Length: 350
Image (cartoon, rainbow, N blue to C red; front, top):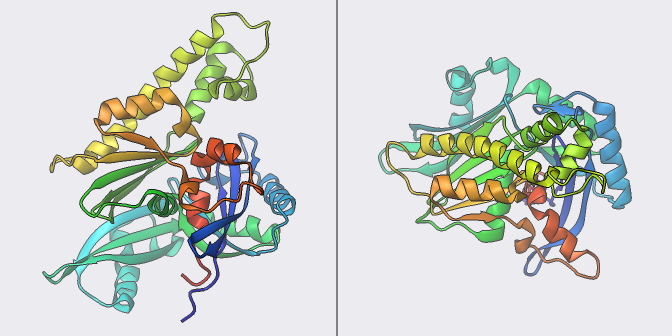
């Protein structure tokens, strides 16, 4: 059976849309197109599309500006409307697994079976008559909304993934996974943090946390009495102008450190949830997403977990032509592109 051609990866995030197109090359993959388009703060809330027309326009503009002809898209969802669980079940065929999951779905997820799309993947078959399975379920209305905006932008959705697993695919391509180690991948976005734990090369735990960089932006906005856009600029190291009081940079650093501590604490609770009671040690924690670039958050995650922390460059495993792309810019925005790169690795029929 043909493996199918690579899809166009489009990550519809709460603060921006990221698009990646890859092409297979002799050495693996080559970057064909990359683009980002910002979204206003209220366009997407907790993964739900609140202003679909703005999202459609942003996708259309991005595709047009990058002169993309490929119409087949892989996209992804996350948040409260998505469930990902690792299950241990008796050995069975893929067809039997699909049948069993359909009938037993409601005992594993927090939604009614007729409200979700669900799929299951066999992770590992043991010698004890059991096998490990990854169950993924997403609410139908959420998936339909994402497919609709892509259709309205003139595109055809061929794959709907979840953010956490798309990020895992990108990180695996960029750095590889050691079969003897346990690593955590944190895709820290504006409003959702996707946590994936990979143990001995296999997905062991997936969780979406409804925390992200917006918490920092909102606290800066509230404390300094400025606009959301001004607060966002300060968060990423910008300035508001020469008339600002000299205390502002120190105040911003204090707020960033305070909220980063809250985010790191929430993340650590989830890391501990998986690690206990086996006292699992993390060999490395990989950070992705725009919020991962905040130095104080990186330090706090490293301090609390006791594990080395590395900010991911998903383009590290991709051939990039410096004559076609600004390599410095790609390196600057690389963590934001992690999910989109993972999606761009997907194929039409896989």
